[in-house]
Image (cartoon, rainbow, N blue to C red; front, side, top):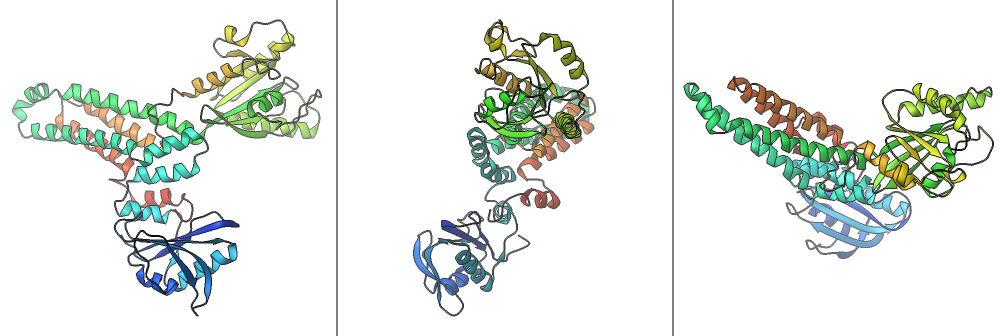
Amino acid sequence: MARSDAIAAVATPAGRGGVAVIRLSGPDLRPLLGGLLKLEVLPRRATLAKFRDASGATIDHGLALFFPAPQSYTGEDVVELQAHGGPVVVQMLLTRCLELGARIAEPGEFTKRAFLNDKLDLAQAEGVADLINATTTEAARCAVRSLEGEFSERIDALVLALTNLRVLVEATLDFPEEEIDFIEKLRLKPKLADLRVAIKQIIDASRQGSLLRDGIHVVLAGQPNVGKSSLLNKLAGAERAIVTNIPGTTRDAIRETVSIKGIPLHLVDTAGLREAQDPVEKIGIARSHEAISKADIVLWIADATRPQTREIDTALIGRLAAGATTFLVINKIDLVEIDPIGETASGVTIKVSAQSGQGLETLQDEILRAAGWGNGEGVFLARARHLHALHLGAGHVDAAIASMAQLELCAEELRLAQIALASITGEVTADDLLGKIFSQFCIGK
């Protein structure tokens, strides 16, 4: 590592609590521990001690744990100090650590050191942050799979397959008069095709994982008084939006995040779209259009008791910004003679009742289907950079297949594919990318 100084940070959230944890990592922390505790701490054993300031006075009583290098999270000496969770006590203890030679850790620096010391690869390191930031149970489980190395193992298998293919192709280049026989004998084309399928499978699993991370942005739009706010409240399971019979009650976008089968659903209830005269309502309608333009899915809510407005709904839907998937949702079916949703849903028209809950399960299933969610098995909580690298690798494999008649070009495309996929686990990674990744971690991790 370029930097080998000791670092310290509070690893628990700010505020008051029963216990606070201060973490330290560095090449040799025994002198620092001696200055802080005035006693010897045995490795991997919780030691009750007095934390002392420069004059020897007691700052606090707590537990100290010492993990000597290299058997630690970062691969360096690691110390964890467990003190009472008062902000003043924590600050005094952290200040004492700085007096003894440590410095404040940068965001993600503990995990960055773990990566640089080969304690975990880059995909696993990102799994740490994903686990901390997980907003649903399913997202947390996927993050754990990445942290335990399942995603890395799949990527490593692809890189190994590419390495073996490169060996075959480049060996063939040494015998140009026998190229055709080598290609057929070694079954190069079928092997490349199998590799392309394997990459596509990981892309599909990773694309679903991005839904677990980022969620699905769903905007509820429609004319005034069609039940958008009621539908939001029903999906959220709480009275988040004000509901009245007065058109134009919702003036500004109301946002709520719910979980559907483990997928975060970011719901936005918007002001009813119509030709408004009220200047405040006009602002709300403008914000509605802005929210719609950023949506993954738009639920256009129509009133089952007002079929005469359907032409207006169709015209308004046609004016929406292109890009998002749009469903026509017929609400208030409990007030009219209409078949139940479970028997009549087809295509992008769905019939529901925000009052009784009729049809909401089918609506949720259609949202997940449109977003590309499957059964969730084998899903990885992939990041945008992972998907970019996978697509880049797949493109180079396609180019290698297309250039088999010129093995020099084929060999080069395989090399580029290997570099793209190896960047996922950090085998090939630029320093500026590392800085960007770890800067998004929380302090103390």
